[in-house]
Image 1 (cartoon, rainbow over the protein chains, first blue to last red):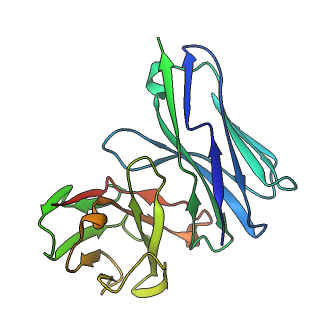
Image 2: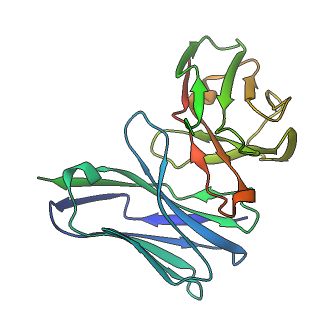
Length: 112
Length: 115
């Protein structure tokens, strides 16, 4: 089955700096890669996703890149703000999306 | 869409008791998923439904766990004879692949504590 590894487990940046979180996956059948943000006491909220036919996707301050050959994908947050502080999870899923596997999460802290 | 809702938000029970959680998906979402999340970990897939049919179950779903979605709308997850190791956040998500994007939207979760 799929195995998703996520690094780093914790990340602390100064407000305004960029943050990068990286994930690797093992199953070449995976073709859908979402990123979720989870705040304390809440369920994960989708912030951006990418499919295998695209190498990069951007939404305002958030971007995701995918390298299918190397089986890794990354989340980039630019101009970080204190409200970006949360736990971020990457995930990978096969086409039918019935067995999504999550990374262990990255706790991002943005210092004002 | 009002979002995915889950009840109760918190449940404290004694070891050996049975508990049941409810999930109401986003209306018209035909897929519903259950996950378990322990502290410091990502959600782990338990099972999923397409309409009322339970199509896949993880090995994590022991015989003490049962999930239903009788009318293809809300779902319940029951844990029988709870154990301390069952303490976790139980998350529900729903999606609608018919709309072209099979994005899973999560509810707030039910936090279970087994004493």
